[in-house]
Length: 135
Image 1 (cartoon, rainbow, N blue to C red):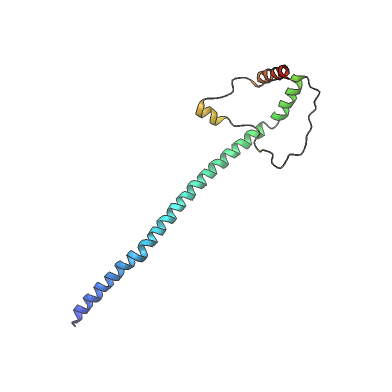
Image 2: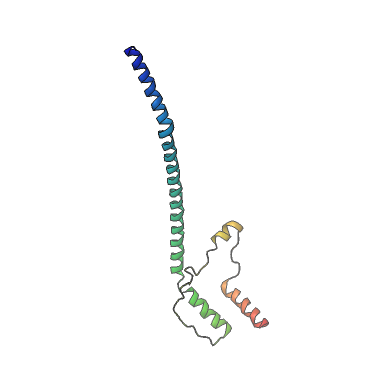
């Protein structure tokens, strides 16, 4: 067999091997790389969402700090308005005590346009009057 013909056959065989290697080895690896890249993008999106939730939680915490005494003041207001002889007792918090004491009505305001229309003291007066009548 002629040396040139042998080189051509070897060249063709190498091309076939390269094509098969690409098809069976490199191409599936590329699919795996694409899957990993998609997974990374999903994780980035999850991380961004978690960072947004963390920022929202921090804003809620800051709002809670501003209104730290609000629950105590509310209790005092109810005692004063009802003329009750009740006294306020401070106890250790239970394990499952909620972290957020003041509901955030932003979503209700944005989605359905709701927000409180009655001032707190007026609402308490109406509530106290109602319960005095029915109890």
